[in-house]
Image 1: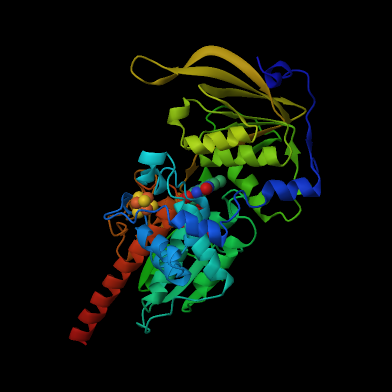
Image 2: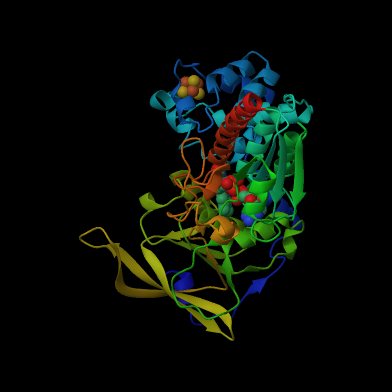
Length: 465
Ligand SMILES: Cc1cc2nc3c(=O)[nH]c(=O)nc-3n(C[C@H](O)[C@H](O)[C@H](O)COP(=O)(O)OP(=O)(O)OC[C@H]3O[C@@H](n4cnc5c(N)ncnc54)[C@H](O)[C@@H]3O)c2cc1C
Ligand code: SF4
């Protein structure tokens, strides 16, 4: 029995602000990994074999020519290197920081075979893109105007990537974003220490500098906007709305304070300048096993929570979070309890006091079942981090024709939806991996498909006109 379990019945609710000193907050939420120095970048780039048909390139969802950008760093052509990166992935600066490279490019690097240490592709990508941004060098220009207008709904990685590529291709783009800032989860979701400082907004500014992108903030599809209206007013529509709702715990919970959606709390954390003003519990329980669960657990620890336990209903190998991310949480003092699920939340004076959990296992047919054995964890705060779902009401007026049968929007290889003239990408579409880099690729692929569609329509129009 752990400390949290022993004290479940006794402790009073303890949620408070200012658990740490200002210095501790800035240390805990500053850049998690320092950037490479020019000398380190040179040494690291020299480790690359510049492989033919490089496996790292195949593992990059945006298909960046990795050996080419690394070779350019080695030869001192940093601008050319950044061009290789941003030409395929306009959000390459944030992706360099947030991509789980251990399961993507670096996971496939041939250097793993000899030295068990891949070339630090992510760090080199960051080196080149930071170099460019610091010098304010704009590599892209808007193409000659096509006279066509495209609506992009959602200003996250998928929507912004689509908008940028469409602008480069000469189309006039309007981005409709529900929130007060662009960037999507880069700005409101990803752990603060991965994207420290202004990097997310710096990237948004860079991307908009290309021109031809009109931004309308505070415009939510399903409220101020309707898909029917956008389809009537624009030549094409791209949906990049992400996943706006959180899965429920699936247990009876009466309203009580102390129970939170992890993504709402993280969004507040990302927008709070004085982290000492953010209340955090002394004992925190996180339900979930993905990246969101790791992030809320690690960040509450870094806000000064004393005892943070992640509870996941299966084993470590089943978790959405990679082994590296699990190790990161544990290094930060997070306890991960596998094979358990919540069955009851217990309150005192309408405030969460503890969580009753049941051990789980797989039955003979491989189904997850409860063992009947229970234990209790004292908790001042509980965070739900068990996956997000599509807000289907945003597309209410078009749901008859828009295929969302699997719970997300169905798209083909070009990211066309079942609704004529409407494309979609990022977390809101079925079959994705819920990664920033995948959303960026979806936006890019959709932009090229929209471009082909608009140019064919234009050519047909010219023939008949
Ligand atoms: C806590 C957390 C941590 C993560 N960490 C990582 C990480 O480290 N690395 C990684 O690769 N991925 C990470 N991810 C996943 C990654 O953030 C997403 O895959 C990526 O942001 C998806 O981009 P998107 O554009 O599809 O959606 P989003 O980023 O969600 O953007 C959608 C945008 O649409 C807007 N919107 C929503 N509904 C409407 C509407 N009805 N009308 C108008 N606008 C609307 C939203 O406000 C938002 O700006 C994380 C996710 C979470 C939740
Ligand atoms: S696999 Fe590794 S060594 Fe080969 S090109 Fe990619 S980064 Fe370089």
